Length: 455
Image (tube, rainbow, N blue to C red; front, top):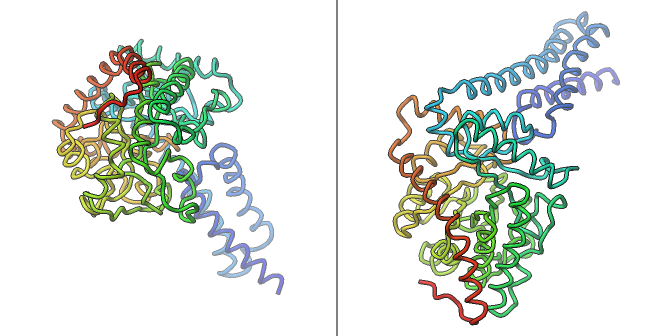
């Protein structure tokens, strides 16, 4: 009986290790990288040898099949690592004209500064995404040194400076703290009088912007302008946690605070991105893991959830992050992040917004678990300017391969890329020019106690 149980356990473990090694480079197993992969390699070598030494091969067809099955994890791990290395090699050998054409539309997370430098110097990326693992155990000066080295690589290559982005909202989401100081969440300002909350939001944005700028970060993926959801606990929300990050359920309050905060960041030389359009306040599924639908009418959304987006975008040079939520009233087939009907039809067309659109992280279940290549191509063709590959930056090589192949096959809209390049150039110039004006505007609003009229 014990022998049978042991055999069953060995079969279960073999199948488990086959699954893990086949998916060893997938985002959900990112924590296995490095020492985890080394452990898998040792197990892949040791397990078949131990089974052979234990006499399993001599126990008939079933024993031999078990030994052969335990050989698969080593083969699978070797294959996945080779595939990753090949994709990276293909990316780095991209022709310069293709690299520059496509690369200016990607922001990529990184673990190794050397890997990021290689992408930066070849023009394969427009920017990098900095998060907690880049600053763990390090000072702000050390982080700034890394970023400065990346910018030097760009200068040497004759390329524009990198966008250096982060999620430093304050409160619940402050991925660079405690290396950088963490500010209170913007929701703490929601109960203040209108003029006071606008002024305080500006000061919070300016203080946070100064800390970010001192470390070399010039693009903050904040503020959150989703309306606060009606529920207090959502069992389907594991990582978004929008109820803890939203400013208020009042669109006017959210818009006032977010606009002040954006202007404060601008005053410190840091660009902002309002998020997460079309709004997550009515969405129960967490797009980090699941597909999500928004079934509210467009008219209702225009009157409530979308008001803060329009208020901030219409009165600043903030970028806009579009999430992976299906807006059923506009495009029931695909998430907003790569829906031309949403990006070009609604945002560019109906709203006349010609600023920069950045997608939410493509390494999220709502996108990565579906047709990733389709999403990449549709986002570029549909009007997105920057595609974010944040949580697992190594997936950039897969994402870039999708774009490169589509370009070779004539499936990339070159006119859409040209318009996007113009928006990016205009946005970079205008955000720099607007800093001094924003300081004066907020100072005038605060002293006079008057709220700026919003169309």
